[in-house]
Structure formats: C-alpha cells, structure tokens
Length: 144
Length: 144
DNA sequence: TTTATTTCGGATAATATTATCCTATTTGTA
DNA sequence: TACAAATAGGATAATATTATCCGAAATAAA
Ligand code: FES
Ligand code: FES
Image (cartoon, rainbow over the protein chains, first blue to last red):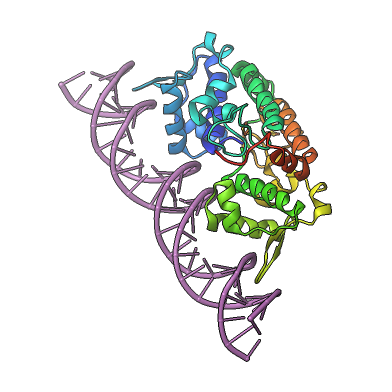
C-alpha cells in the first residue's frame, strides 16, 4: 500500500510529534531506534519531510527534528504521504492506465474509486495529534 | 496499490475471459498487445495464474490461454490478486509492523483496517464476468 | 576562534521488481 | 515420424527501491 519510505516517514513524524509536545528535539538515531528503521535511510526521508514543511530541522549542537506544537493538530496524514509517495495513491488508476479518467475508465474504475476515495478521506481526516496521543496513552505502538 | 505484475495479471485475465466466452484461446503476444504490457513478462505472470488455477493453458499447436466458461462468473478479483501479490494487501499492517494485531495495533490500525476491509470486500465481490462484460459492451477499456 | 554536535547531501551498494532472451518441452498435424 | 506451433522455464539485464557511508555545512558552547 505505502512504500517503506512512507511507512518510516509516518512513524517518524508521530515520534517527533510526541517529543515536540514536551519541547524535545530528536535525532535520526533516536527516531530510527524508536520506530525500528534503518538510520541513514530514515534521515533521507526526514529531509524530504523538512523540504515539504511537515517537520522542522535545527542544525548544529542541540539541534534535531521538531514540529511546532500548534501545527501538530493541523498536520494530516495525507500531507506526509504526499511528501513521500506523491499523489498516485489518491489519483492513480488501479490498473495503471496513464490517467484515471471517467470518460475512459479501466475495468475496475467504478469499484476502485470508492475504496481510493475512502483512503483519501481517511488520510485527510487523520491528524498527527490523534496518532501521537494514542501512542502516549499506550493504546497503539510504533514497532514490533 | 497493486504491483505492475498484478495490474497486468488482472487485465490479462479479463482479456482471456472475453475470448473464452467465444471459445477462443489467446497467446501471450495477443494478450500483451491488447493490454499494453511487455510480452515476456506477461507470459511469466500467466504462468503464475496457471499455477494458481485461475487460467488454464494448453501447450502445443492451437494452444493458448483460456478460462472454463462456467468458471468466469465464479472467479473473483481477489483470487487473481492473491495469486500474484499474495495476501499482504488484505492482512498486512499499513505501517509495516510484523503482524497486524488487534492487541498491539499500530497508530493507523483502526482507521486503516476499515479501508483495507473495504478493499478486500470489493475484490472478493467483483467477478471476472462483470469486468469482462463491461469491456465487451464498451463502457470500460484495457489500455491507454 | 576552536571544537563538538548535528543535519544536509552526494556517492555508492544491496535488494526487489520489472523486463528480455533463449532453449526445452508439449502437442497437433502433415 | 517429422515438423510446426505454442507454453514453460532458466538465465540474464535494466530499473526502482531500499539502505549505507562519508564528508560538507551549520550552529552552539567552551
Ligand atoms: S481508470 Fe482505472 S481506476 Fe479510474
Ligand atoms: S497493526 Fe497496523 S494496520 Fe493493524
């Protein structure tokens, strides 16, 4: 469904959010340990999230990654997915036709678009805050 | 969403079904031209579909691929996807946790499982016959 | 200003997916 | 039986994704 990069990106953003609630910056090392991902690869993904303005990075001593507290509730899962995997998951044809087109639909178009639309709505309606709070309260988990 | 192999597999199965309605066997060459896919790669995928009993192959002169007519309505999209991509799309964790587990859910589990379940239901409720008839009546298309 | 810390970014490597090529095997027909 | 037609399957190549390594640039503190 999502690429590995995207899975790591989502988990990393959640972990950064949790720490930003408490004004702590975190490093790629800490993040990759917490979400069980390869460190250098995770760092690359974090760079992409920084470029797309999902997370903020501070270089140099006492630096690290953080998310503005007032941004955590406003940030939606869809923004993270878009930053890493692009919009093919929302827009692409399920059977790989060049464009998903109502006027020239593929065999699964009508059935597929319902699922795809629900996925899009789910991603757009889920905030980083919700996900982070569930981790904090111990009802969900980032690894294993 | 689906792998390229799976996209080709679905389209190939639909094209075979259309021709099986009229008792025509089709070759990988014909199939790949009709669904716009690489021929040799498509042939491999067809082998997988044969192994999983989704389509039947007949070797030698006048051979080709076909699907028993009384099987076309009974064959569901889910069987094709399963034969090529396996069951991770139905069962796997959206964030790549080793297992999708109600007792140790990942952050997106509760929201993701709804979408995944709808996808599963869609695939299990869509028959090859429906898809093939839509192509025959010209309301859907296999390429471009 | 020097040093330690930390992200950034380019180069490279490992692995998985997608794609091609060539030969073997099967089967109908002359 | 010999031949032609067709799928099966192994070997290989191209490309994309995932992963690692290392030095450059930035920043805070000594
Ligand atoms: S055309 Fe294939 S999903 Fe819309
Ligand atoms: S645990 Fe991640 S989707 Fe169920």
